[in-house]
Image (cartoon, rainbow over all chains, first blue to last red; front, top):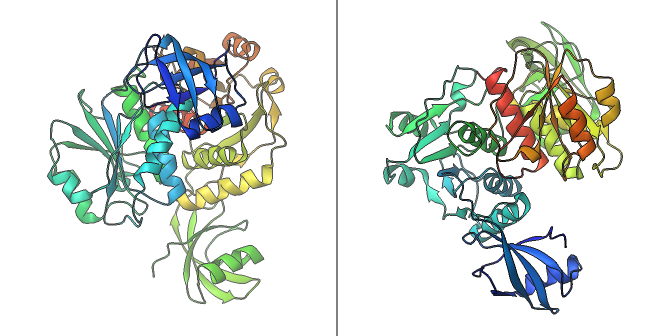
Length: 239
Length: 239
């Protein structure tokens, strides 16, 4: 009766609901995980919480699950976004995975002056966010937004959401975090940091707070986890 | 005159000091990075700070650098160790890398009941710690210790060093961190967490404090960064 497998589905979940599986899910569940009719799986879709479901039909390219009972209600993450400059492919995947684990509500790739990354494959990143949610027991999947250029992002920013940015130039400085409750976004720069112009623009903006992440230079994926930890502890759902 | 390349060497550094390069370093510096005689490199050895050095001889399998001036003094990390249960190879490498970036002073693999990892390749892990120190601008390299079994570790523990362990069973609970200054170690469990027996032993020990890392289950490498962030902010060199 142990239902350890967690699967994200794009389908409503509720009492008596039947949930069809697509080819990839059927392959994973029946081929890779060796499940069969009667087996138990946990389902979530990002909106209806987590449900225990039973395998009703198992085929090579399709399958059907029946929802049995809700095992957990939907738990939304706190209202914090992660804005990050894409880096090498594997590290970018890691940043998205970490952001989903750490409870970011939305993930936005930002193209800065020192961002040397080609096109951002949004579908692949979204799939990583889904996989992280499946693994970490979350019932919510953060959306990975379209990549946006730094200046366009800042110029069009809704100033009711504050931005905490991690300034490597502050490394070693004392940082008391002056953070007020409300919607936030955390901005992680690229390898090589922000340009002087970008840094100036961030410091001048009235909706930003600079923080330091210690005297050592952190890789972007490490910085994302550290910054989200600080935020979650102070204003989020860790407290 | 820009010396952006940072290299860890096992050799004393000081005014007028000549530093021989081994085959791998020579290949990296001259072959991969295309440096030649007169080029500038930053060196550190974990004890003498960071030095600017000039390439005096460049060969295919060897080379010599001359120390010019100290660019940074040795900066020791605060006295915090990272104890972690090895997981899949790539994730274990990541944990060591993150621990070095985050400023752990010592890294100890711990074999717990639910650790399903074979032999720990200490040399490879140590190389990852060196590489992380090269990248993150650190002047210190944490030692990766021999793997040790959970019970042996706890039974022989020097109780003047406290252990902060991350208890997934506390997920969602409020956690005020009751941390006192002094030497610490952070213990990260394996995938699947500690066994009930191990958890009981940790809770009963008088030199341990349990903390929660929020309501979502974090992968071990994410948990290591989050826990080190909490510690560095409260007791370490980020404050």
